[in-house]
Image (cartoon, rainbow, N blue to C red; front, side, top):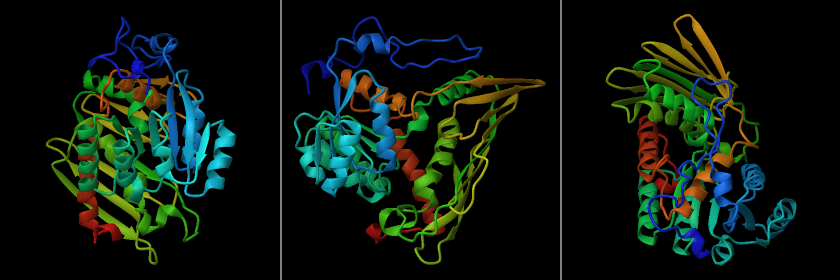
Length: 368
């Protein structure tokens, strides 16, 4: 990594302290334009390696191309021809048929891991052991034990690690949390969020493969759980119920109730039907509705008494640019974790999902 990327302390240098770029269109909050883009124009580009060449990796890589201070240096897949095709499509420098080859590539600063859930912990640790910084798709691991090993490796190697929970960096989510923290809807009393879609009947699908960490809870249930955790914190009590696939034994539908001292969260994830994908946050003095599709929204509605206001906050590209910029900000400041989505946050969220899985009896083969 170029010396300029190492940073010199806990805060970015220069006069610019606002590194995220987003516009609060039609919002009563004062619009802020970050000086992020201007601040990186003369700095060396941060070089990414893409681990796994599936659909999500393709969307993420297209957003790297929209980020001024980034470039795609290498890609890797277990099938070298797939890696070569991916590299050609996205103008990557090198294509590898093993992940280990990419980890040894000295031209790569940070890797984005987009493989099945069961490999996240192992690959994240391997990458950091080889000196790479890591952005790993959610969930960061199968369970809290694996997550703890990842975090220990990050701290020991002083390599940056972040779970790619892109929703945390979405401009609408940033604005909503700010409103709630400012007390604009009063004390939050109820959250209702779901994530549901119908998967194809293909038994080979990763989403319903138990041996790959499939199932509703880890694949999509993490999003409703995240929203409740972001707004209300770690629940005092968790109640979960699931319906299972008769053949693969993964959870196809899971409902969760999180109980807090003075609030409830009603959460659902499913792989057998669609849903409206609108999240609702109710406070003692107002409500916020996060627009469809709420985990990657481009706006929200604020209701206060008889007044209803709609705020539009478009995202750039596929919506991954904000988390990419957060990674860059952290790397340039020599941080090993993000203040917006920290190691502690990731560990607590996967611990919540551990409790839910324990309640419904969902155990992965790797845990037996």
